[in-house]
Image 1 (cartoon, rainbow, N blue to C red):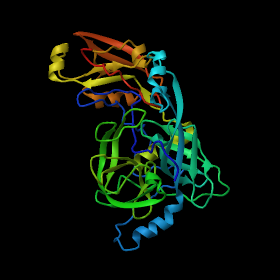
Image 2: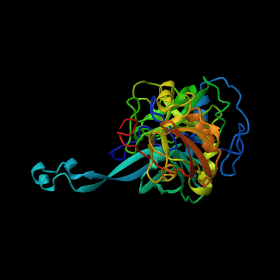
Image 3: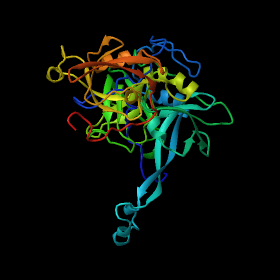
Image 4: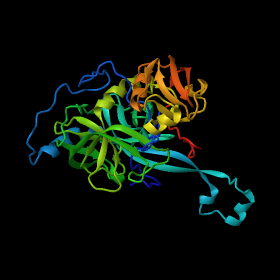
Length: 410
């Protein structure tokens, strides 16, 4: 077992700010999934094997699980990522507070190395594999352990998407590699059996079994119920919930149906309950994958504001005719919103003349526009209606953290 200073426990996501809400927490105005030309149940891609059918409901016999694992296990890998960290010398066991005092509040930094362990699987025989972005985020060296090979391969990044927590890596192997088929999460029913394969706590190729407990779960990683990591919060919109045991090190591994098809990528686990794990559905993967392979990132329009959904109280305070619109809580510096002159406290009431009724309607209106497109933003500023022009940017591929004192009245 490799010595660890940290093991991946769950995915985390801090938005590349679109818009957010202050009532009940912050959220972005995008769905985290870019618009796709084909919204059918099967999205074709030249990069991966995609199932074109829904497997029949099979009786669960004594050999069903073991047969699936035998057939697909060699396509599942262990990932070890080396991540440098900057820490204060005060955290070093060799730090002497007396001598440290000569630095005042500006203690020198030292670089330490942490090792993150996760999982992944091949979707293309030429060495392309899928995993979570949080497994390899910030890593300077990524090693992939492949069944049948005595030494690990060094992987390179092909594409990453912070918002959906997906990443594509590539290794160069001497021969074609076994692959998994991407199945249809949309038609996978609640209650269907599922199989998770991964490397929890560095226990390679651990198999657990459960059922799909729920679909379409929204989730924020980083609150008290889900263990935070080091790069902020992640806000998921659409996750599969599974009762299969998911533990630190499972992140990035496949969640399979009884036909051996991938229906999700294991991503997060509740810290307060047993049998509560979460996976990114393949419906999301299939929409993101082509852009990761082609561009190395996902192209999304970006305004750059966190917002709060309006209410009758706010409508009265701001002199609005109806309780619609969204209040700007924070404007990201140097964002399209900042360049357009949008400011904290203003209420966005329309985009291109179409009324904004809530956060989702703002998201929908912005998502219709291309990166680089210009939009007219109508705002109410203490009773005065103003229209401002904003040129949408490309959403940053990483976390954005708003100041702790951001919000109305601060």
